[in-house]
Length: 132
View 1 (spheres, rainbow, N blue to C red):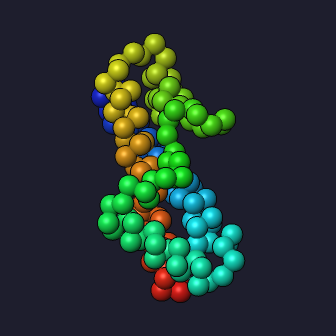
View 2: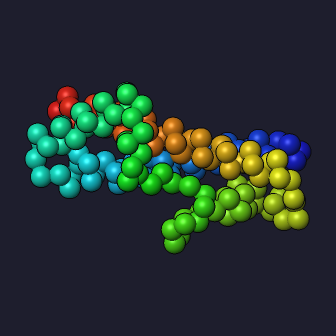
């Protein structure tokens, strides 16, 4: 496999890992907002409706209190960009210093993470409203 092919495979792996991270983070938000940590179904439905309205309206307040996963390493145990690069490139990462590939891999993770996070929350909120 060529280096270019390895990079493409690494980008795909990074995207898959980002998607998993986004879904996992959304699950935590969901539990606090309309899931198992909310006292009643009506409160869950009210919270889900408020979330969907803010989401549909593009309300910037929606982002208050939401910590989207990132590659910053801000929280203990979180993956960082260099960690991700090493993980998806494996032995190919040793001695390989290509900022463009590093950026592409990190961007693939972040894009997939954000998409999975918001998609999961929207689907979950709709499900709660419909009492499924």
